[in-house]
Image 1: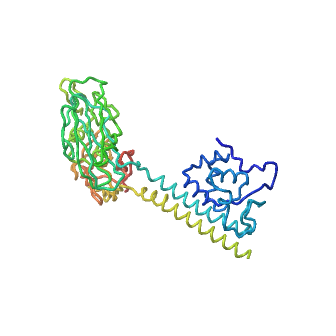
Image 2: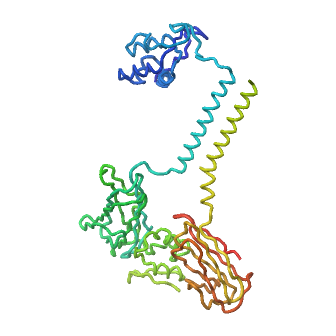
Image 3: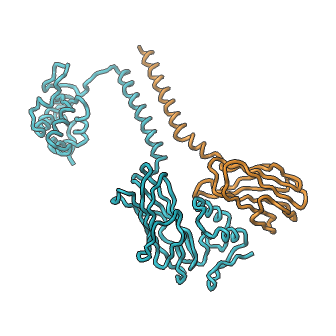
Length: 317
Length: 143
């Protein structure tokens, strides 16, 4: 990295041969010659930050030696990058102080306070905005919600929440690959197509809201054993942006286990927290047939047992 | 001149304070106050005798469901209720209602008991999830 020697006094402490340069002119010449700030910084022997500062300040006093190198890099005579419309008589290379304007101290304090206040207000605004703005910066995102487990041969709900980050209406395609041997039952809204060979299902929909939910009931294979896992995957794609296909995030597998899917803590009971979670998560899907009556009766009872032979749950009173 | 500059600086200071306060109010305090508004509140309309009545008020963003838990004195039985209770635990003298599809506004649960009770003998609470995916919250039914 280039060492910034722009403050080097080269054996002339306090005062060095200085020249006032025109920042806008430097930027213009650099861009015209298709040069980068990095190139200029390397040639002159300063950092890119220094080049940026030189370009952004209207007039700036810099060392004559650096100005000469800068002019050489920009392939122009030194005069061309010097300040042209100076009211000061010493517009030629001369001994000038780095401070271009000498204001009364109080005026300068005021000039510092106003931008500082404005900057802090803007910074606070950005901070607050960033605290509340958690949207991903892509067109669409999706999250899958699965129970933690399901018993062999039993049905369970799968939810996909889709969130748009661009203004609706849009058309989208949701493609979901379900585990081999697993059956996709009813979907809400209706599944557009099911491919039995690929074991996939698709929704092709036009949506008018930022958030939407897609759900389907799935039936676990009856011949699975405990600890087996069913693995799901899927994508969501906005029409006309096929290259921006997004993977469905969130849960991607569930375990085969002898517990009801709503019994998330596996204690053979559905307690208040668990039943509220069921209605909390699946309330958007009133039509989804997720055996509400069985869940309600297990909650109202002392518990349940899994009858493996009969492939059913028995409530305990 | 000194006084003029001093006043100007004071004015800038006051304006920046005002801007900061506005930002704090609109960005942090107002959302916090709005989210602090209870999703459900409940109180006894009648809390003694053989007839109990509980009025449940749900806010503009009600939870998907809630559970009303009524604690009764030992030996007291429920003869009838509207709506019907979902579960009665005789060991704990506790009846539960699973309230589904809560709508914004007021609804009342009435309970008919087999003997008169006093307000001190009974208590009730409501359990619900105030935010989707959040933890269960419990509020007491006011007497």
